[in-house]
Length: 210
Image (tube, rainbow, N blue to C red):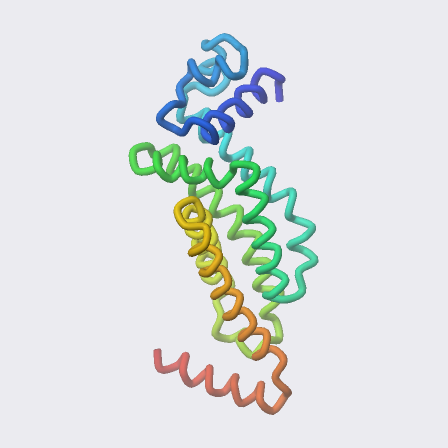
């Protein structure tokens, strides 16, 4: 990647974090990157394509940063703890603000909507792998859909991230409630073999009637 292209990507992310999507234009990005405005169109074609590239780069960087930690997670409680750390880091780096700006523009621009779906898909891919591994051998294995649960967890964390900017106390309370549910799942996983078989049987019956 050329230095100019990277500077434009970095400048775009910075404008999104500090000024918002309504203030983002080829002119503002070029000024922040200290390059000629024409280079925006040379490297990216359009401003929405530039935003898409910048947000993809940001999420790719975050996913790579957490990949090793996801691989070492051994319980849902540990997953939640990593989620808390991720939440704090994404807020500090400004990536939460970028996601909020991306979602704000997604209704009017298909490229921005595509960028939002890409970000969610990257995180869901990581979460699904963890959930699938943790559910193997669990009494809940036959009733939990790892892909669906990963989607739900991603949506919850994105929602909490955005809610955090409005009501940090309420956001933390919601995250604490999620933690209590995770503790319940961990208790289920710690059941003895007899109780586990009984729970599996009840879950199969309940699932069959749905």
